[in-house]
Image (cartoon, rainbow, N blue to C red):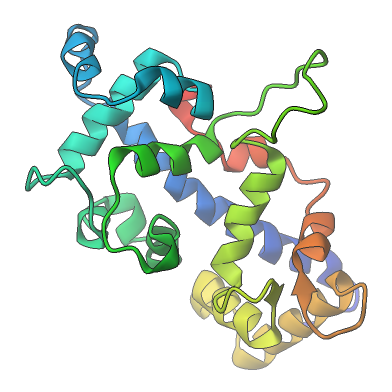
Length: 231
């Protein structure tokens, strides 16, 4: 593969392909709509602790939260009141996604083994569509579903050791999983080196979050990293 002429668009395609795989996380919530009945909302409301607080924190409506609670209960087949990694592994879209294990791990930060509903919906709120509001208070806290937080979620799928940078080894590992048999090892290494060369602005041989953000500044994350049933 020659990267000199077509490489820039190919490298960009490799980077943005990660965001396409991140859309599988949003599909976790898309499945909530299956089997949800309007009449079932009232029974869910009584089970959800601090519903007003969740609405304020996440930006979800009461109806959306009830749908998500319904899905949470469906995934919690053992009625434990919490979810495990094994529960997520039953979701078909994640099972066939090359980054499925990493996406699942993103739901369990800091070595957590279980996930309660509040934590579940807080993570999914990152995938709520972003609505521009010209009257928004500039001093208000950054919303969970901001573009920056969506990028942070994608970045952590690369940054395995959580040191705030994507090393060459981390990048090539993820690209190998995403591209699978589409390229040879030599081509993969060339793509990796070219990607780092283009994104690495400070010349330290790795990609920081700020460099990652800048490389994706013209990419429409709304299409790739938003929950469809909310659009």
